[in-house]
Image 1 (tube, rainbow, N blue to C red):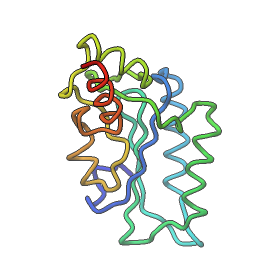
Image 2 (tube, one colour):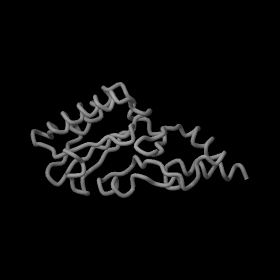
Image 3 (cartoon, rainbow, N blue to C red):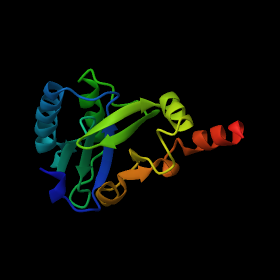
Image 4 (cartoon, rainbow, N blue to C red):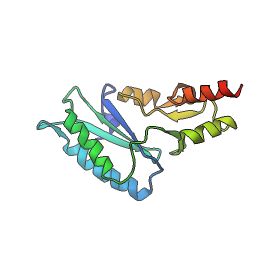
Length: 162
């Protein structure tokens, strides 16, 4: 199911790859995720879920919890499935900068360096991997760097440099 068909209250998990995915990797992940979400169950009950791959690096998984909420064990299955792809979707200290239909994946050190020389500013958009609902994903997926987790590090750099 497409996540666009799910209600805004649906629970969301954002899995961000540590690199841009090759076309073949996107194809393989699409196949895995489609098969998984179509058969996803929690304690024998079907879960209404969907997924989307965006910016060649982000997998968004959504579940309509109003119909059936996934158990902890069934949520773990998504994490295990993605870990079997040999792609690291669990690096939380990276930034994903949206760029047309793709993205740029950078480390915090690269972000600080780019901030120092003005390539990144407080208004530069990054992908918010901390959204929790589909409404948030629809409305707050792209946030200024000043509202992201790395802002504190950039503020410390700015204060230190003065």
